[in-house]
Length: 298
Image (tube, rainbow, N blue to C red; front, side, top):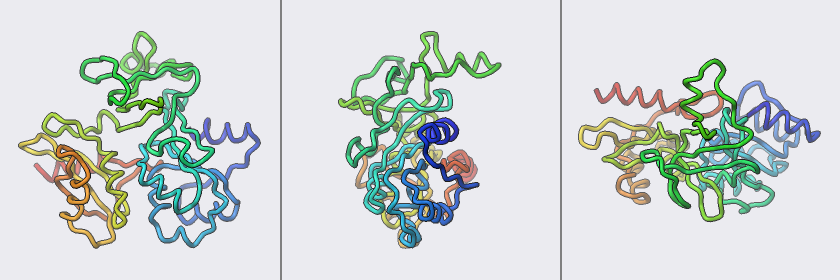
């Protein structure tokens, strides 16, 4: 993504690129101010900081015209909060390493051009299908299922791994992404979460990313992650790991979410922590939290 979408594409258009050795919020803000950066490719955890961290106000970010978010689903409330604070357009795209690496991109020339929670329409010459993960049946608009991709950007396969390739790309050339998504009546696509991340509560499937986006809309919550927690009665229940300003109780967090979601999506356990574990790319390392939770409930 960094090589193809950011570096090579930008250079082909004659753009200047500001490259940082690693992400540091203050260093990033200083670079935007010093170099007059107009466009940034970011991940949702960085947008959380741009929306909520007080140090942002110490820098002049008026040069920023647009931000494209990727790597994980971006909630509508968070995108709108960043737009409101910085005055730039926030959009998102979607793709995988196996798709070289983009399949969807939301138009971003002006605010409101694409729904904030959407990754936009599919790219030209690319086909998509939404498929029921249990039955393999194709689904219609508004129905959530696994996103399949077919197009010229889909990889030939994993080098030297025919079994892994066969498990990912079927005989008709469809790449099974492992992501749950749906498409609306405008043909805009919405990424719900990874299939393997879904929480199975009494036969219902709960997407952690939806609950995380809701948690982050609370002004007293600076970061959050939701994972499955073992439960003898339900099998699995949603548990929230929360970084807050210290003003909330566990009951406050659960009430905030549970008043806004269906019964099966309710947060049923909360734990306050100092920091959400993340990869260098900014993705939540849910596996660390899941393992921690499994050990704690044994």
